[in-house]
Image (cartoon, rainbow over all chains, first blue to last red; front, side, top):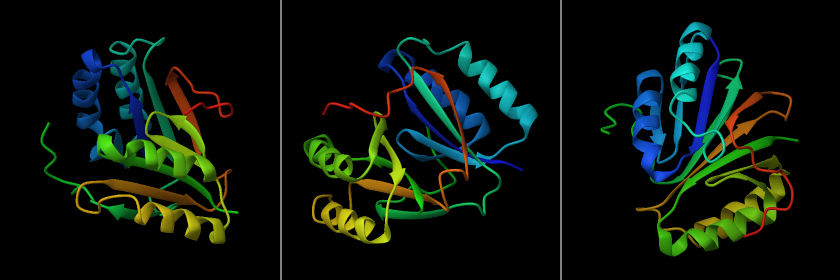
Length: 88
Length: 88
């Protein structure tokens, strides 16, 4: 299953909506970063919800898709957010 | 050469310093995301500079290291920042 790193830069007035959507599909790992395995079908749904929420001329979301979760090495400097129990 | 995606969550008072350091080594692609190829030696230097700048109890920097730049697929929703000419 592909593993995604999702980063976003969203205007204040929409950022909570975007976070709520991303939180349904991914784990929240840093202020503006989510991660997780996702099926192609769920990713389509997620993208559809996001497209209906963001302003395409002001907001930005990047999807970095890796073949699987073994395909990268992550190192953390400073505080690391827990992968579970993220409260919005 | 490894390809890195670097995301950060830094307190306001230190964020400009952190950006200036990252800008020397990577391309600035989104508000809190940098990307780029980097040698192991340069990465060590970059990490050393960052360690001397951040507060390890409040700030956070994630380094996602991929084997090379062909090892992921990036899709952008909304605005895409140019990979060159980022002005701090």
